[in-house]
Every structure is written in C-alpha cells, then in structure tokens.
Length: 360
Length: 268
Image (cartoon, rainbow over all chains, first blue to last red; front, side):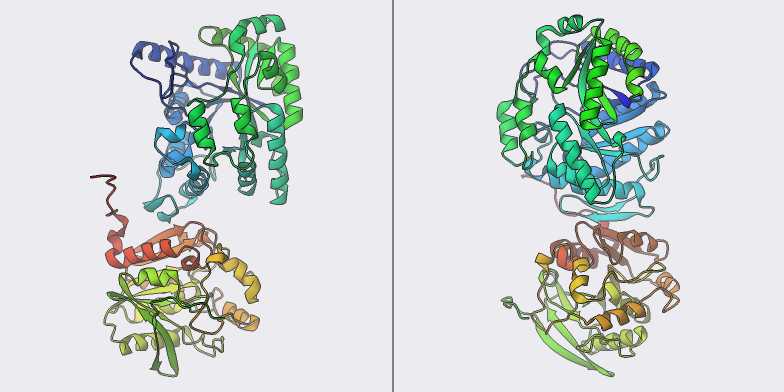
C-alpha cells in the first residue's frame, strides 16, 4: 500500500465564523508560521518515507491557506525530494483547463516527473468562489478533462470548440515529463463519476466519505471498468481518512477530546450546501451528500473508517480492514490533531505504523 | 423520407456542367461559401441555416454521388473540374470552400486548380492523410450511422431529396477509392496550398480519428486545426451551432479569427 500525507495548510490562529471568512483579524505573521509549519511537516513526511504528499484546493477560509494547490506543490518540488507530489486537486470546473494543464506540466518538469494529477469537482462552496453554476459542474469537468489530455499530448498547435470552453491556438510549454502524462485521478463518490472514471481510464479518489460508502463506490467503479474492458490496479484507488496514533488507544482518544466529534462536513454552511445540492450537483445518489451533513461521534468515525485512531497496532488493524473493504492501494491521511501536536503525531506514525502499512 | 420543411427554404437548382448536372441548395447573402457534403449525404440543416445568416451558402452534391451512389469512373480531378465549372457558371469570382469527409480530396484539388478563386479552405473530418490499414468501421448504412453521429437525435433529415443512404456496395467502393496510396501525391498537394486552411475534427470521430489532425500543420503552410468537442464524423450535424460559428468566423476573419473580438463586458 502507498501512504500519503495530506495537508491543507490550516491557519494556526483564531477561526472567524462564516464562509467566506472575514479577513479583518487575519495575521500575516500567523499565516507565514502556518505555511512554514506545513512545509516542514511535508519535508518530515518525505524523510520518514511517505510515498506521496498531497495537497488540495479550498478558498476563502482559514481552514486552508491553499486556494491554489499548484503554488504549494511548486514549493514542494524543492522541499520534498523523493516522495511523489499529489495535487488532489484543482477544482476543474471553476478554473481554466489550459492553465491547469500548463501548471501540471510545469510541476512535473520541476519535480523530475513526480506529479500525481488529481482533477476534482470540488466542495459545493467553491462554486460561489468564482461564480460558476454548480448545475454545470459535471459537464464542465468532463470537457475540461479532455482539453487537458489534448493539451498534454497534441504535438501541434490546436484549437478547441467546446460547450463551455473555447480556445483557438494552444500549444503548451513545458510538456509533462511523465509520458504520455502524469497519472490522472478524479473524485469518484457518485455513480456518475465512477462511470466516467471507468470509461476514461482515470484513477478514483474517495474523500469526505467513509469505508462502507467508499467500498460501494469502488465496487461500482471496478464493475464499470470491466464493462469498458480494463481492470484498475489497487493504486488507482485512493481513500482519504484522518489519523491519529498515540502509545495507547485511550491516549489517542484523549488527545482528540471533544474535537474528535465531527459536525456536518460543510465549508459553506447548510444553506449553501442545500442550494448546491438542489442543482443536481451530487448526481442521482445523494448518499454522500447526506453523509457529509451527518454529525458523528468519535466512536462512530472510527467504526466507519473515517478516522484511524489508536495505538500503532490498532491503526494498522483499521487500515487493513479498510484495504480489504475498499481495495484502495493508496491511503491519503490527514492528521487529526492540530498545531504543535502534529509533528509528534507524524513522527510516531512514520516510525511505528508507516513501514507496516507499506507492506500491505 | 421527408420532414416538415423549414419556413425559409433554400433555393434548389441544378447547374449543368460537362457530363453532369450538379444539384445545389442555396440560401443567404454575403461572402459565398460552397459546402461539399460527406458520408452523411447532401442535406440542409441547422448548420447551413446558421451559416446562411451571414453568408451566401451553396450546398452542392458531389457529381459522382448522385442517386447511383458510386464513383462511376469519376476521378477526383474530374469532380474538381466539374465543381469549378459550376462555380464559374454561378459567377462566383471568389468563394470559400468547405468540404466534409471524403469531399476533402475534391476540395483540395479545386483549391489548387482554382487558387485565385478559393479564398479559404475548410476541411471537416477530412479523408486525407489516412493511416495505413484504414477502413470504414461498417459497410452498411445503418451500422455506419452509429459512427457518423455522436448525437443521432440531432441528425438532420434530408428533406429535399430522397434518402441519401448509400447501399453497402457503394460504401465499399467509396472506401476503396479513398484508401491511403490510392491517389498518390496528397502530401505534396497539401504543401502547395496557399489558401488559409481550417481543419476540424470531432473529438468522438471513429472514422477519421482526431489524432489525424496533427498531420496537417507540418504540411499546410497556413493551417489551423480545431477539435469540436462531443462531435463524431458529421461535425456539422452533431454541433451545428459550433461548426457554423467557427467556420463563419474563419471565413470572415481568416487568420485573425484566433483573436477574440466578442466583448467580455458583463454590464456597462
């Protein structure tokens, strides 16, 4: 199994309420410390032997100081020397696909061919970010994927007349180092996405979900891939979860305390989430949408496989169960603790758990 | 099969030339645009109507492809000469030439022979530069239709003529006629083109794969290639608005069509 450390560059200061979050009390000093801390953790992960480091895109909130994950990935090409750098990923429907293609190509060049390219539809609030209609999300995404693939592989200048995008003369420089292009993934938490990923030979990313739902999505993806004449490898499925390891199970639970209980997973608030859901954004299966809004206790989160928590042996057992249930070959982990505790948690995971999971 | 006719009909005419009467549908005013059909046959649809809003559109039936649906011994040169004669008969001093599918070879020859008359050349899903071993995916019209259209629900009904679906034997003959190497010198002829040239491929084309687009810029001096998303071989049927827009802009602005001229202003 491949292990990935996922960090979103959380602001290490007070969180104002609401989204978009007001920046009146924003501190540049805190933000600089937060960014330096994030880079240091990634460097440590590389040193500890993580296979991947991963970044994502979120806007207008202290939760994440990476509205452009490509910028952070650029820094990582010089900080992380061995591990692959997974961008999971740009919110394609709200972006310029040619720009996305160019950025990935730059990063692959700067990193010596270590980029993993995830293309995402993003969390619902992101459609407010750049004023894009979420009802058009899936169509924009699918067209964007094709444009990016063409931009990476066409040897001559070309134009594009799509439904949402128009270009008259494209020829990107630099080109990706990896040929024909970096490994491509997309989020696959809906049947529609699973079908598209299967039909187009894309890897599948499963986040903001739990093991039972992810197992269902992965099963469907494999079935559809078989219908399209191919079989995904285990490394073409990524499962994202949170993790916290301590000496004992009890200590791990106490470390999280009340913060281990999760409320609705919505960045933009319930009203916005509801408005976006009504556009058909989630597709015909609303399981994921419902799951995101359901609060869970610490115990429920562990039982559902959203959170790997406990002693090294407990976490290893939980990861084994996850792998058996979903068949994911990449486990993309965020640290469940915050701030200064993160380094210690990462070191413990890296020395006591990581090598064992890599053997799975 | 006849569909209900659009309100503003194109004008029908036959123009006599050596050895054949060429059937032509015409509508609109302005810069003349001669459209040569492909495998989908002669029809008048949304693409033509949209293009005719700003241009004089003349959709012509290829001389060799009348009701007999066979090459009848017509070479590409003979067809090109016949069409050039028709254009002269119609008093088209200068015109823009659009060729769909297998009409590309005839259009290429016409653009070379009448270089002073052909202002721009547009090749849509062209049957030029086909790879070794290329063949049609089916030889009966019904099966072939699955490859012609990404959106068969948008397929225009040829209301002006009887069915243009070709019998299987004719399709095999057309395929043989256009196989790579059948008429040598295509690459050299493309290199001789002086007219600004636009090449369109549908991203879902399984007859002329879009990867063939990359063969044109190295050969054609003044060449633009565009992929039309979610269109199969019959680009103008699947995405008539997109095809009319690109081709109309290319005809009007030629190489300058790469520069956006539409305002991005949201509100004054």
